[in-house]
Image (spheres, rainbow, N blue to C red):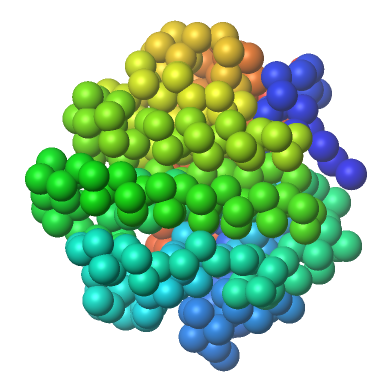
Length: 340
């Protein structure tokens, strides 16, 4: 097996910089579109054979150094007892948002094997077929909380911040239940065969540093500390992380994901030598001419050398409109320019 990704997570010497792409199994790939045309999104997530098939597609086409399980961060939220739908216009919609104690009391901490067996089965299928490591994942507690409180996506997170500021005890109760779910969910993925896990804190960047420290950091530290007992690398990604690095470095994550809004060398300097880093090309750089895209790749690779370890990635998920051939060229460029 090609284990270069895992070595980079641990800060070990590698023959080249490994690369994978957030949302690499997705709509930019014609192969994915062909599968998706036959089934709705949730059915795709919940059918192990299909989820495994689309997980494998970018590994085979792009030659990336890691696979990430095809699923959605809200699968675990649905298992907690909320009704989940996906709308082409609105994205994810969670009916009856959780904004009261009675709403929180109705939520359960699901057993993954019982309530999400399709996730476990997909992982087992993939481990039998992959020649690169498999990454499991979940939304981080705060990001999941925003969807549960808002009922879907939000521009200003009014209801979430209102609960945080006006009823912190209630918010803490919800975060505690979500954190226990995340720990259980990812631990089950690891026991099924996931060789690393990533926590996506997509919306934590909407918070002021002092609010992140008070309302989010304790749950992240708790989740990561428990997951590290499973013995696999833990990646923590915060979108719009620049203002939060002082607090993020207090986690015990093995790898910190960096978005594109901060210079990678500055991020590494802020984090110190304790962490490997992942990132951080702007997803829209895939629309550049190849020569200019390669210039950006070389710059990020050079800056990544200052970290304990570096995994090349985009600073957020690949966009559906991205040309698949440019993603192939990106991976090839990372491998070529980073060869030791």
